[in-house]
Length: 312
Image (cartoon, rainbow, N blue to C red; front, side):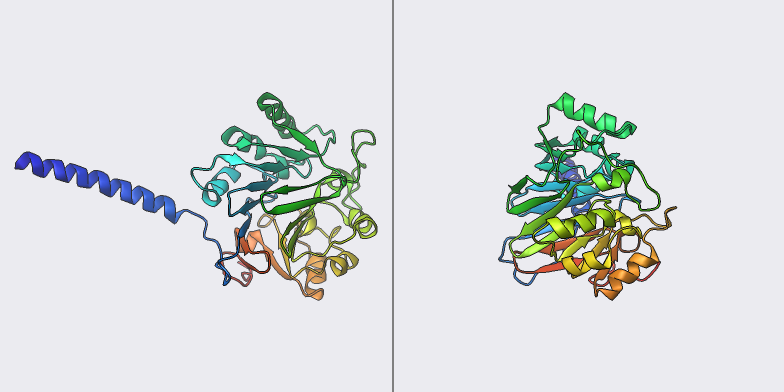
């Protein structure tokens, strides 16, 4: 009897440990906003709070993933661990908008941890060390690479993706020179994407300046989007009034680090967004910004719920 009692105590202890472990894992999972029309296929989008940098995951109901940029550190790994299923080790598409450190640094760690089916990036030449490591990882793993241009559109699961910029390869022309007066340079080589999910649209601007926005006003047949990933972390050199009038976003999202040395987002951009009637979320105040959407509706929230947080 004593041996049986010890046996059941031992089994009970194991079950308790397993239960606590599973409960702990579940408590760390990302909580997505709920939708009233839950019977429709749902797309989840997470704008991750990774400091002064961009990292965004789009994930449909079938588990198809698009990761746009990897942020400035390997903090992206813990974010992906909360947003993706523990059993899912595949990312269908990784997009590098441009090879600045606040977008590329975390991607080498992503390639080491996950199986990536394809990379979408430009062929711009840059000397950043993290970019070289990223390129080396791509070559070693023989990951197919698609060079971004406006001739390219594609589907990932239920998501339809249009490349709006660049219009052509940078390999022959080289990137524009950095110009602190306009915020251009390598930023203006950023891949700009419009992702459609039924009747809902998201526009990802990378770090392009108003010079590229002006070009898009003349070359893109439609720019309208429900959610605008605000260009260049809210820099004053992006998000012009004319561009906002064309996009007509309901929500704007700024991926920005707290008390960053660049002063992002700037008051000029915040005022322009406010005057255009755009409800603005920002990762330095709102934390991870989570979106659930169906082909006809969407809900967006940060750590403070559906309304942006007040200044912390």
